[in-house]
Amino acid sequence: MRVAVVSLALLLAGCALDLGGVEWRKPGAMVQEVTVAEVECARKALEIGPGPDLILGGLLDVGRLAIQELRQATAFNSCMTGAGYQRAS
Image (tube, rainbow, N blue to C red; front, side):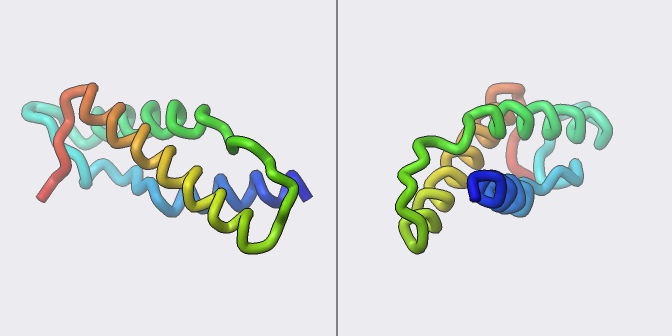
């Protein structure tokens, strides 16, 4: 059961993070550099971990996973901004 929850969390995180190198820009940075920065920030965001396992299941796990995805997306965005990148319009 725990493996399924972790797998789902990684899948959701993967859906939230687009690592195509076109959503972020930095003056003078090539697409390859942006992609490398995105992958590094995604790795750091996924290191946050799944958070507490409440062993309650059902809709409570869905809410917990949504919060986890939000935390990871926030960490990713902070990492990219900290590296000098800005969201592309």
